[in-house]
Image 1 (tube, rainbow over the protein chains, first blue to last red):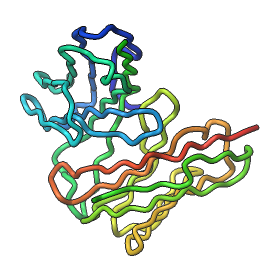
Image 2 (image 1 turned 90 degrees about the horizontal axis):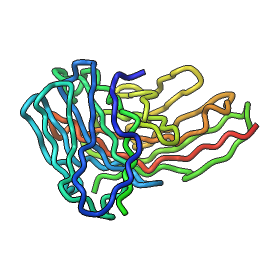
Image 3 (image 1 turned 120 degrees about the horizontal axis):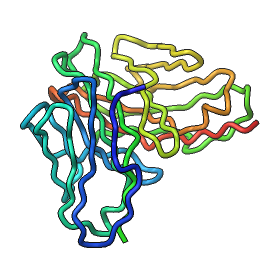
Length: 120
Length: 114
């Protein structure tokens, strides 16, 4: 079982509230990711990080922000939650150094259990 | 546009039976293909990863095949168990960047009945 943890597991909040979704991993992975997943739909990458002080936007535009001050911690923040932010948010991490280059073993992404967010 | 299409969308089988899930992709240039199992309310868990030089890989009762020429993959589950009930997600990685961008399918929802 992967050592990557997300809190809270479930969150119901009102519109306009500021929230932070926590993600921590104890595997020493440099690469971390945030995905958004709606029921029956594919995962969409919203943020990723190559390491400390590195953050990048993913493929799906998101009003959330992330920070990477420590290797093991990759929190996601919504300054003002709206009903359109209702979704499941999945955090993942993977090893670094090998990269996705031909002939080299690809990384496995390890996922947390997710945070299911409902904004009323 | 790079895409990953999975079929069927959902499948119901009886415990002990075998089943095969399909994945077609248009991702190019291709790096590797992964199958994940996602239990309801949980994060995906990796089952297999195959590079372009591999055409079959097993993990217990799960066997994945890959045909890089036709851009098709299948996941075969043998002697299904109730715990196999989950969504099975096909994920394809390209070689376009160091990150190795991942393209996710929508998954096949498998239900195993006793």
